[in-house]
Length: 336
Image (cartoon, rainbow, N blue to C red; front, top):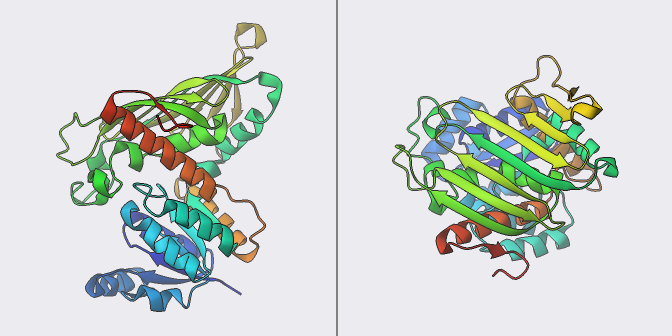
């Protein structure tokens, strides 16, 4: 039987989830806090929508939290109290308020919880993860991850200053909105133990948030690398490089290509993988949601991105914010 999924939020990501859930055969309900906006979304998306979250929640098997990050934890905890499986969009939250309680409640509930970091479902990054799991190339020595695009290019036809992306207090800004890169480092390179960062607002976007974030991360096993995120780049860019003892791995989102460079003595660069013909960005979201629905039916299936992963990455982001504010490196083990 098809699950019934309540999507909370009808911004661009909420609407994407509604469409993808319908494609995957789920019954979809939609919550918006304001009745007039709920009615508008119901007509535009051809789903049942309303402002009474509790009533809608009682009819759902699972909940997708796709609101602004400052409301994620509140909605997620309500869903867990009702015993519902959870898909929480990234970032998990904008601060630590209620996060520890959320983790405890999720452990007791025993339901599937997934964090919406869909880059983990990119086919060539999944190939990279399999290769990095092989110890033959040696440990991770260094890495660089970067992503950027002007915020006013993200959603054509909408004022970029009106959404939460432009407001750091609600979980916006280059660091939190583009937290995928921190998640990729966590997933592919391992946990981080120290963070040093500079967050700046240097562009002409007229936003109440950082539009540039530069981080240096020290991994728990000693590797060191950089993460740069921005809302300023005039051309979209997203890339990752990981240096190991025997090879340098390079991935580029625009081409989707994964390259292994073992150096001149080992044949130089070699194409390892590329996306299948016809691959599109929405395939990432669709595949991640398909995985989540499988977990709703069978909670023993491992998450693509767990709640624990989401909490770890939130801690990195909060440490980066603190490092920038205080002008010093933050040790995650001691919070000093």
